[in-house]
Length: 298
Ligand SMILES: Nc1ncnc2c1ncn2[C@@H]1O[C@H](COP(=O)(O)OP(=O)(O)OP(=O)(O)O)[C@@H](O)[C@H]1O
Image (cartoon, rainbow, N blue to C red):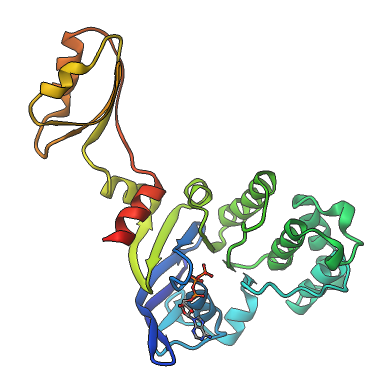
């Protein structure tokens, strides 16, 4: 059976203000779960509760069907919001050190560190002190540090913030590889384009409430309107007068139309074909940013 990290009905407040309200979602082994929300929505608080740094007021976090133990949590790979590597240590030293803390032998930790530093493009900086690295390179070192012991569960708070597009791709490929090998990966981000590219599952939080959660593609289908893109060789002005059809966008030979519930999309296609060749006819799938806007503003 696939293992699941499950956040169940978690509530948490600070000084009488509730910041997490009945938060529930799953992080499934072998999948990348993107956790998205605006500043202050509750992502870090949720991750801290998963990691056991904070206790929930009520609710629980389970792993493979049972409450998380301290040993489970110690085996997790994590990247806290406040980061926390040692500025005076060399990059290599600290990744090896963290590997040793997680029970690797010196040889395993060294091999793991060298491997990861190569993957994230830091081999040339391995002997330099962390404090001499740019913020983006420090971030890459953080990723290596979180992964060195090959954890089964990864909890990463904003692992892409401050990374340039090339570095994002590098980190994305390392994380994907871990997920493919069976790890459960939960990462928060406010970069919706990155989450869209990377995640299998999405959890959207706003004001401490989960607004949508599930498989990315299922959410896209769920939030799809009956919108279609149509491209033809001649002017599409006739769409203005077509019944059951609302024009969202018209640019000569290309249009986005929304059909009323029950209206037949194939009939629209036939109408278009009757007027000449049709070059494109496809449903418009909402982007994660559109879904995010819809669920967080309602
Ligand atoms: N220790 C604390 N004491 C009081 N309030 C807190 C504490 N930690 C978090 N909060 C509040 O809880 C809310 C959620 O914060 P949290 O850091 O979880 O959000 P976030 O989604 O991670 O935001 P960001 O993207 O800005 O990091 C915020 O309103 C924050 O001010």
